[in-house]
Length: 441
Image 1 (tube, rainbow, N blue to C red):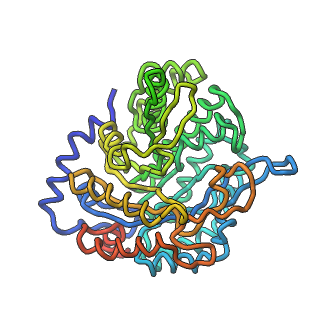
Image 2: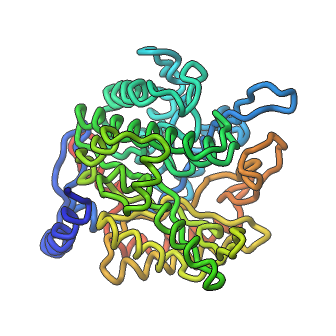
Image 3: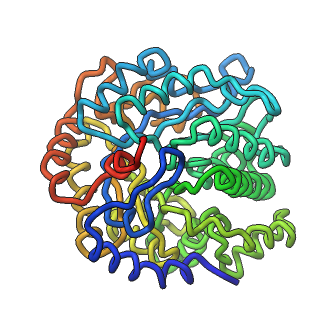
């Protein structure tokens, strides 16, 4: 069976050699014709994002309640101001997408009004979007991630989006597939709010299939790059008694990316999938896909990304490897270009210092020849209720943005501006440079 490593292991050296030989970016058309792999791997972009999570939970009245982070931050009304903050800070790449639940209003039916306005403004400002199409929630009419029709409907939406905005060349079809499936069907927080391995494998199967089908649908329209933002994890055993549990969790963390990149999981993970409802036909479907040559491995790293595992199964955060060590593990497995697609820290825990540490990790990877092409502080403004994983609507502001809710710059924003100012002239061209180099862009 083919694997992402078989492709990228051969290609990485060629990418870097071409990057050394070429000094100018290749021309491209104003439609979706992104840079070549060699141009991409020598580029570097500083990025942020607009938080657009929108899962459904059970409200205090016992009824379904949509948690809309765009509304919670005020972005739905202050989007022009927010885009100008992005531009003024010197950022030219933005993880951004319209709320899926409000845009895909029925089978074959779409409300593009908000997306038309916002993406037109991003294009006018010269900010390259990484189109974020599904962020933790689906439209009410689809229901939840247990719906076997979700992959088909989502692929139709992705193709319609790509045809409407043909100049967009960077996509995240489904954000953090593993978290989406876990929080919806294993931990019972969101959407279907189930807590079983069978429900989890069902959600996982549908989410990854939807991501793959959407990627294939977009590729029917153009030749994009997919920035597959996914949580990265590592579990350290506290004692010999915890080694087996930690080893299992360290295999489990690759579930979604293995299926997405057509890489066969370990034997016991395969056994787990089959025992909990994945059919051989479904597994073979994933192994026969070929979207990985168009993929950038988006890696999300937080203080909780690493943990100590105790014999009783409990865990405690522990940043022993750091982003540098953890990302090397993921790159060794998949051999794809890399982007740090999410990190942040709250102001009271010295967010600026956390930023400096993560930037030092990214820079070291870049200097050692790893094909890392971007850094993202997520998100532009503070977030709401992520300290409880959006399980309730409390309205508690998490002070982890580049700007606060009044759009005043935070210490992380000041430090990010300094890093961009100091390093933009030293690192290679950004995604915006690549886009600007295209005739008619």
